[in-house]
Length: 287
Image (cartoon, rainbow, N blue to C red):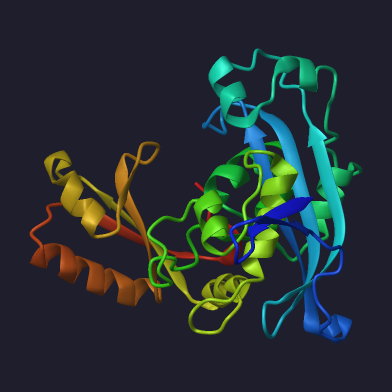
């Protein structure tokens, strides 16, 4: 894959994505495998829409620094959804029915798609809640995997980025690419994660560090819909399945509950009951 980067004179420089991404010498015990993954789909709902393209870049990563050392394998395939792909979706990802006709990904444990994802200690997507919802439907075994998100687990605003869109983030870091091509999105995320934040850490290390923190899922029911903007300001989002306001906070469940209740009462946000659940890394982006 080529990345185009601007030279000082404004001209474009073509950057090749090398198979080997670093020269750091480490032993196998000091590394982990990370699969950068992306799906293109017929819609936004993992329960009813279908995958039409899957891309995976399997990499070797230094456990200590989060540096992506080298690429190990790639997977790229269209997938026939056996239903009409809308014109709107085709405009977004340039995939139509003729391109995917008769092509089927083997989702079984013997297939390469599962093999490459299952070999990774962590799967990273740029909007993991979305990609995960589609992939675990096809490969339920992946629910046990640790998932990371380059969109939500990095404080991009703290690093001077007002938007967490992948295209914008890549351009801000000096390169751009053809978006909404599954493998290209994976490669772009891989390159982005090799960039360093203002605090000197590789971006991937932010995700790795965040996964080590105790996390609590807070579910608040019986709240006033008219206060929805106030809930949003407190970091909550409406969950249609649970019919509740849901948010995630750092810290043990008992401590989080005390702080959240205190804060909600201070802000005069009404609710009937609150449930705090400890979240494991494998559950982080589950429904």
